[in-house]
Length: 258
Image (cartoon, rainbow, N blue to C red):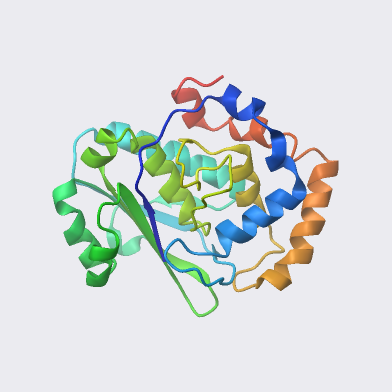
């Protein structure tokens, strides 16, 4: 499965997100958004089964550019945020062989070589021109067992997308691989106007990593689970407070949100 970011991102403030039409807090909208983002693929229109990690994440960073301290800080902030939302244990390892997520922070001139080596030679042409990209591998039970994230830092910075590349690609490899032309507000929008997780993204992640939803489930199997959970979340204000809870992430504070 491939995920790629192509177009530049615009900065959207917390105030803009919270004051726009609250259509995304409708349980039916959240449900349909989950089906589109979690059960479809950016490069394949065929609907598939739920994909998620069932084991802790071990992350290795191949750093081929400068500003290592800054990049590591950004990565740790977002991965900590994802762990807090999903309850997935996430740690960093010092060798590639011990990792199930490999992150390549590289330069544009090396990206095709890395894609060919780490994903497949066929993917080089398919992912041509992407600002940043990711790939996941699943086993026969649709459990995610490996992920690759490739960020050509020079290209990402030219497009103003370094932070949004980190946020979008690392979030997508958790099992939300599709981009949408219609769903918003979300980092999974083809409009790419959000750099940080939104309240809707928060809810999609919490749905995916609900214990009741397991890898390999079909839409018909998860539908009653999702509807029951969203009904409960509407009553206990989980949906209402999603935006307030998602902005507790450290990246929000780093980028000046209050």
